[in-house]
Amino acid sequence: MGEPSTCNSSASGASLFRNGSQSRVLGITESDHCDFESPTDWLCTSACTGTNLRFDDATLQATIRGMSTAFAAWMLGLDSSGENWWHNGGDIFDELALDGAISTL
Image (cartoon, rainbow, N blue to C red; front, side):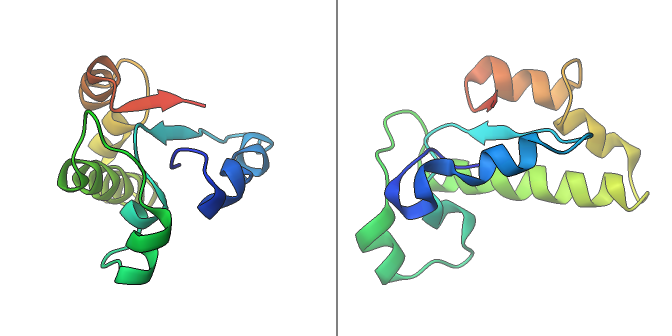
């Protein structure tokens, strides 16, 4: 999930996902609504772009794409190593968390 802002109803969807029995809600540090669009457009970037003090847009988008791809491959049974992106103790998860790029919400 992106950082809470007016462009995502202050991350109101997080509570919906937290209520799932097997849910895992992770935040991508400094990400905004536009970082999840690929490609985004001028309207989004003029109204919804957040402040990036640590991570640039390319880094944020690479993290989002990596996590999304890993999750899909893992859940579809195509690549069990995708779990390493989503759980404590997974080498990629731990690296992203140590870097401050992700957090558990």
